Image (cartoon, rainbow, N blue to C red):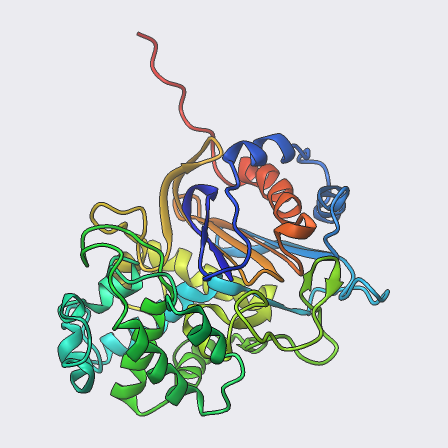
Amino acid sequence: MQSIRTRWTVVPSGTRGLRALLALGLILAIGGAGAADTLDARITTAMKGTATPAMGVLVIRDGKVADQAVSGVRRSDAKTAATRDDQWMIGSTGKPITVAMIARLVEQGVLTWDAPLSTMLPELSAQMRPEYRNVTLVQLLSHRAGLPENLTDAAALDAFFTDARPLPVQREAYIKAALADAPVHAPGTEFAYSNSGFLIAAVIAEHATGKDVETLMQREVFDPLGMTGAGFGPTRGNQPLGHRAGKPVTTAPRKADDGVPPIYTAAGNLHMRLQDLALFAIDQLAGSQGKGTLLTPASYALMQTAQPGSGSGLDWGVQPSIAGRQGPVLVHGGSDGNWLAWVVLFPGQNNAVIAIANAAEDMGADKATMGVLGGLFAELSPPLAAPAAR
């Protein structure tokens, strides 16, 4: 399991799995496609020299889908081409969607951003470590709660891959263990990427509503935005498959080295079409201009503003610039080791780009996706102003 965060640096989100640092220079070195090239041609060029089976890219300009292309095959051992209407796993890129769901519940008065964990989960207050009792939803969803990335007991985490209990029951068991883990730093003091924080937020929402997080995601985000191709867990049926070590992944993951467990919906276990993810991105862009339809202006601002001493909002990475282009920039990426997804928003220009591959770094999907993104950034945002001469 892994997730990609701000400044094009991979921050791992699994106890094991892929680990890498992807330098910004890689984007600049690879992303040189000319503006006259079609998006299809850019994707094909970027995939050359890699083992990436397929990649899809969608470009948003002025708050609307301006271009979309898909190239490659659904699985590397067959010839069926991937299409524009195919579904892709988006990994931790789904975390902002989870935040939007929680924000809707806050706006409805069901949850409160700054309530302490001890009152949101009173039945667990006595057994959780005292350091976590005053943690808030804002801290959980901005990776400032001090929680480890995942359960520190790797065997306990692996057991959830084959657990047959209902997902809410499993998630409650998970967070009981997570809240017994020692913090990596004092809560509220600094950033530390944590999938566990998102699972705790999910259980809080489940307790408050009596609904599982999958139902809440559908009701509060997918349905209002018309994300009709969005769903949970791996892609199904005649859809692209994730790949690892040069082969399609045809069986459910059974340990953290294989992917993510079913309980990770809130932390990154969603699939959807490019255009479904675009609907969410477009609403986030509109929200940055006071025109969003899903949330209140205050909720968009909270999501898109870096927390004190952090480069993370809830749960956008917030950057002043990217690859020499003007910001602000909102970015999130994610991978379960079998897929790779990026969403990059330029709110000031009302532009964005999404890139997804059905493979990850071990098959060169990092180079392929960044190769396309690097060239597109130059068209989506102006260059940074040159430093004033002294």
